[in-house]
Amino acid sequence: MVGIVWMIVAVLALLAILAAFVILARGRGGQTELDRVLGDLGRTQAELGGRMAQMAETAASSQAALSERLQAQERALSRTVEERLADMAKRLEEGLQQSSQRQTTTLHDLRERLAVIDAAQKTITELSAQVVSLQDVLSNKQARGAFGEVQLADLVRAALPPSAYAFQETLSGGRRVDCLLKLPNPPGPIAVDAKFPLESWHALRQARDDGERVAAGRAFSAAILKHVKDIADRYIIPGETAESALMFLPSEAIYAELHASFPEVVEKSYRARVWIVSPTTLMATLNTIRAVLKDARMREQAGVIQTEVRLLLDDIGRLDDRVTNLDKHFNQAAEDIRQIRISSAKVTRRAENIEAVQLGEDPGEAAIEKPAPPALPGL
Image (cartoon, rainbow, N blue to C red; front, side):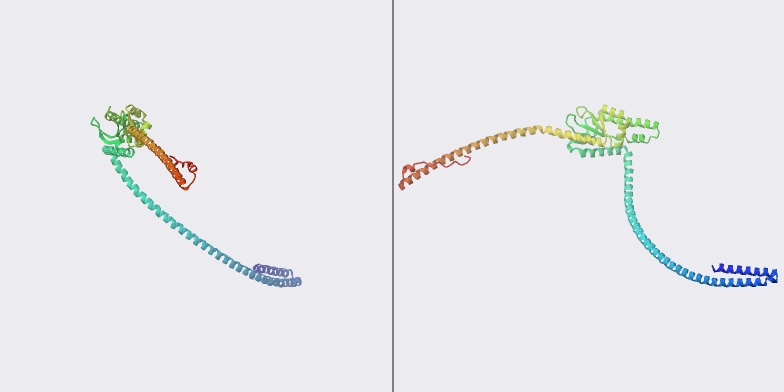
């Protein structure tokens, strides 16, 4: 503001000088006008000087007040900034603590999960080794047959008593069957033979087009039907075994594929009286056989039970006779006691009569018989 005032003063002074030059240029007659103008300029300059001094004082006071307000605002802003910084520092510290706690918890959980993953990895490694060994077992026909026989033996032992089965039983034709279920006639002993057509089933599962699938399906059907024919020829012996036999497939997947995609093979096995079973259906069959064996044992024991019942009836008859005789003895004893009491009453009356005669009483009154004492209850 002060700079603007000084610029106005400088402009007015310049205008005064120009006016003076103009008046001088007009002639001497303008001296009076020049003096008047200069006087006006002096007064104007004096007024401007006073106003400038007043404005300077006002500007100084305004600047001081502004400076004080700025200092107060600066102090307030400084306090606000300090408070905000302190609040931010506190929040930052709390956030860092919470973040540290979360990180610690996360690291702890991560270590636990890594431990679980490590244990699972060890288990997977062991299972991989077992799967590899199982594949080695299943790749060998003899080992695969032994695997099926072991599974068959475990199922049979879990469902039936030892007297109801026999493993590797030799039949009359010299053939040895994996398991012989000893059922009473009918139906008679049932042969169970374990088969595992793994190669043909793998070929069927790994077929890449329709042609390979058809060829693998034919090979799978042929393998199953060959096993069915061998079991029917070897283990269904009239007069020695039942009219049917069981072929045990130790794989639910092969059993499901057979019934889902090859129903004609299943029908041919039915006609040959060879029932194809899986571990699940074999367990159901064995439970049914156990119920049949229990019923057969009950029928075998029926004669023994009837004999024991007859003997029990004879014992009951003799007991009844003896109770009747004992009742007769009790009745006779009661009669004897009654007679004894009658005699005792007569003896008592006679003694009283004798005593009355000695005392001089009227023997007629003494001769009146007193009532007999009551008999004992139940006699």
